[in-house]
Image (cartoon, rainbow, N blue to C red):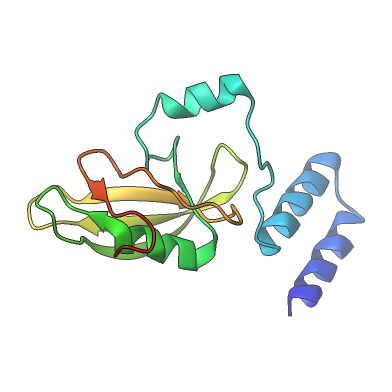
Length: 142
């Protein structure tokens, strides 16, 4: 199936503009589990860090759906409990790394509900920082 989809994208790229070819390349990289851009410049990193972790401008980085789930399993609400979380779907706005992001609704005992964005195209990456106002358990300790 992966090869069929990649072949379809390559077929489309044969009659596409440069912009379309860049999009096809990005989609192919994401299908392979990688972000279109694995690194940001120092200036881009500084701009990302100006925004709260988990925002659309500074998404949590993870390795695939399993990495998303592992992050939320380690996250703790301000009252110390594990939050309830539900995937809302993918958003078409690209992350700073050029990837499509997933959005989750995160709920604790006390309001508010949180909207959290995750870029799951970062092989081997484990986010160690919690969302603002939350805490996080180190990997392997939850």
